[in-house]
Image (tube, rainbow, N blue to C red; front, side, top):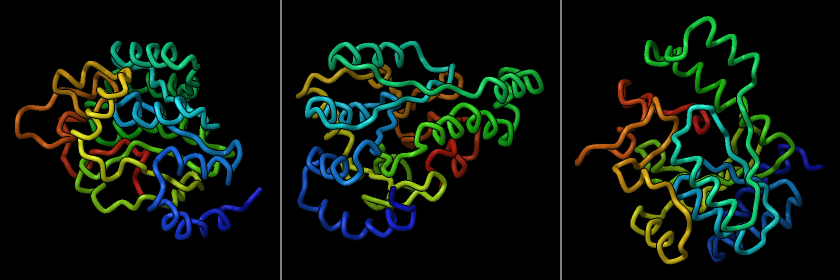
Length: 239
């Protein structure tokens, strides 16, 4: 198995090669380069649904998994079910570590994330970050649905980058897509999507921590709306 350093050193060559490939072609190339070691994490957002469609409709050998935090919207579970049905698949779920979650809840309570930034980050770590590390263990490539429009912090992201926390190449295929382009792709291919997107929810996470945005608000305003806007990350994509 390649070492992390060897994998990291491939990024410049892959970035140049991918400039002339479609997303399915790029994912197929990665799958051939790293057999059985390419994974997509999906939250069932419209972005993740586009990539899921490209993978499953082209029968690409990519592991697709989701992080079930235990506090997702009912609508999220509905699109999960619809996706399994449409593509005749079973998207794998990873859950929070029972011991860590029970300790947190018993010590702090079920809604402690509203009380301080430390509590919120602690909740995100248990429900998202730690399960992600387990899900990516043994993989070489992590495919995400990140887009530059999501936040100022993401506007300078590269197409491929090294994720040192998980020791994988992170591939962001939709980085330069606009929201209109994503929605058009969803509509043209009749891809299941979360109906909350039609109700003003642009970034959908856990139900207690997500609201619809108001006209003129920032894309990420609906996530952890009670916090300073400069701190709005759950820890999955923080450098």
